[in-house]
Length: 520
Image (cartoon, rainbow, N blue to C red; front, side, top):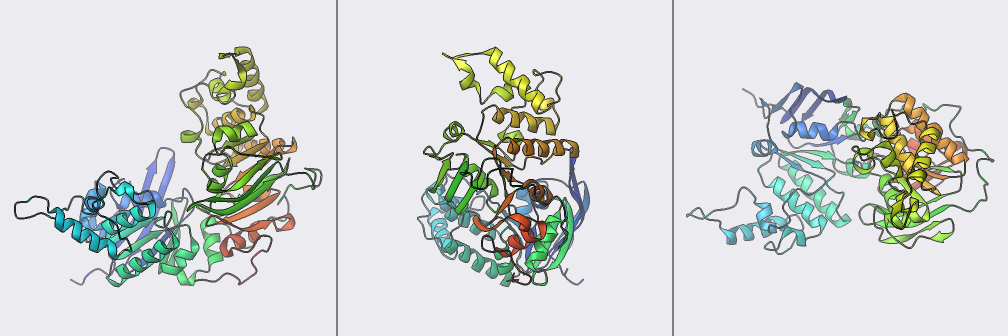
């Protein structure tokens, strides 16, 4: 019988979680010696697909064929032993063990007495890592290495397990430019050896530099498959986002008017040249009172990191932040809150609400120091603030004492908004404020943001929904790979120009023209 033309084939793969269809009939084919880009925005299904392939999840429907036979792995170890290795964005090794032990974990060389042959293991570990551009004392604990070097150790371990398929999930997120080039050299070597590589990344330059084919996922479905060189960057971006080129509404694109705020008003927030290693490379954003500034860009472009850096949740290496004319000297979240900066995080469940506490307790949480005297909290003042914001934000709950975890997603988001508005902020940072809530609640939250801006609050809006970003913003600052690549104002605040700027990375204020983006 002739050998299979593909090393891995996925047919009709589906996976459902409570209330969410994460994968919906997905197909994927990998051939030996192929570097295959797997891309899509947050929630597209990439992580779920990887976890099904590697035995973390079992699919609800569909087949996986590996090296000519149908397979179903119960654990990642089973998948790895069969020949499918995965390198995750977060290094999943053991920091306290030596570099060599991590490299050979589970397959340590033994001597004739079946005892660990440490000398041979250390020698072979040094030789292996040298080919990956890593020269370290392999006897030292892994935790003594930098994050980039640890990632290269994880890569070396994955490749050294006789894998036929290597899945790389955002492998360059912690690497320096020199290490990225080494990684690409390794990937090309794997391709020459007939090993298939699945490459997950949000960085378009990397995709076009190293990948042969591409599969695009959106909302759990495969929406494109083919040769990457045949797909221009602008078309790739529009496919990921689900927006057709030129699909721009003629009306309601921007709410900016001269009376929204004084055009010459002093910025309420000035963040200049923010640098966070591996995440932000000199990002600058300014917001005037009453202005909504959008942050545009693909997943991983640095949008969330910018908001966290401004709010003190992510330490900056350099740069400056000025709030209402006063420099922010404390690089901490409490310092930012005292200065008037509030952040509504992207993941409200893990970083925002406390499900077991009541609506009242969640709203009052941040304001408690202001509502207490000599360590005693004024219950009357708490009740007054909670009642005020429950009415203003139209929070639907049986009472202020109902557990917030029992509310709908939209009302949970309103509770979070109430918590930070109770702090009387000067600047409100909103990271995906309408994600995961129904259409009605989404419209209510958008209306609230509009009202807050009209009251003079400065707002930074992050959204993966292009229509929401365009219609909700007065200006849009576009990020790519941790840098500002454009700023759209006036009539340029439209979907077509935004997608072109994301795809081509035009200088600020200079939209990409037709044909300006290259394919590699």
